[in-house]
Image (tube, rainbow over all chains, first blue to last red; front, side):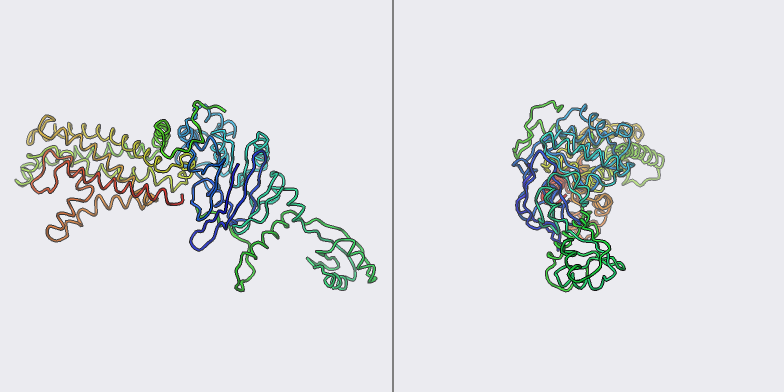
Length: 317
Length: 278
């Protein structure tokens, strides 16, 4: 089990993690979701003892990472940034890690087979593709057969086949009773992989709940309506507390009103409808909206221009 | 799970047990031997040191009659210092480079993160690196020192005969290997402080090659004292059979000063390693 309590981390002026508390339970896949720059990687680095928190503590199974004598037997981690010497072969990289934990050489061969790197294991890791590098990182994470896995964007750069493989691997590891903590900035990926979600934005906790519940809660309903009298219906909808999300000729997408309400408004006012369709906003859109709100809350005063899509700020390491 | 030991992964002792430390040594040795820069640096150490030993001693002997009397007297008084100085002056630079690379390349490639995930007790990790690196350089350094000495002694035999049984000579030859080992640690400490390969190498070479002549430019006895206590200047005195008439420090005193420099730098490196984010 992983527990974060009141974690904060600041790099210079930038607050990366802001008084974050949560716990990650064994036996299920917990998704750690947030846009790029939300503080996911930093939080993981704090949990793994690579960076020191400014406030708060993080423990794994009740111990701070730095107190673990053979951490790889307890925790397997995949970091977003590469963590392999480019001049060293995959085999020797894994061998040096195995030796530091007192694991036998045989285990190195086992994880190489497990991730399918047999053909290139003796080649220098510097020549690896992104996908091969991810596989090597996963091999390192699984080396000590750990009870806890902390994986930062594990599907990054993988082809669809490999993504499916990782997904199934994570589910299997969780069903063994392990603690699996996986970060991603892709809502759709997490929706199919994670049982539980911890969502952060700007270093703060936005949601900590079951994936199903999160999807239910964050999917804004909208209604697609086609009418020759679009102007009038739009006005009526707005005065009834709705909002016009988009308009394309005589097609409107209305928000914050359900389909029966829109139909009622049209009937009462004698507006002719050609189509009236309830729509579930895409998960990805819902997630973006949710985290955008968190970003607005995070801005303290000042009249800022609308922010462009955030760029990745997680490469500071 | 295929494990061989029963060590408790949850153990929270602050001190690392000897068993765990031996595992770190095995791990660090794998890391050191499995990158090409190590092989190249060791090869360069051997080739450059022996090559220049032969070159400088042969040239000096062939020009013996044209050399001025003071130089001749210096060589005859302490032939082992001349022989070792001929090759190690340049050969030592490969140890400087390798010492920095051994740790700083972990930072430049990101491998330090894998290292610290496996060994969060950072001081132990640094200690294991030091032991493995110093031992490796010591073994290679001693072999090179003895080969250089016997080769050089044969070449200078006619004008400046010297044997291992002469006073201080054996200590000087063994001392050359010791000096390289400590120089390796000195470079490793700078690499750990700077965490950047190019910057670290520049820093060490600056210490070893640039600072000494600059210190000599300082006026009066201040310059002489600063110069004498510079790390590599003090350290290489161990490669002399006797204390030179101009030297402020004896061979062992000089080596002690060098060890002190290295220990202080390693101490600072360990302190920062534990404080800094990786």
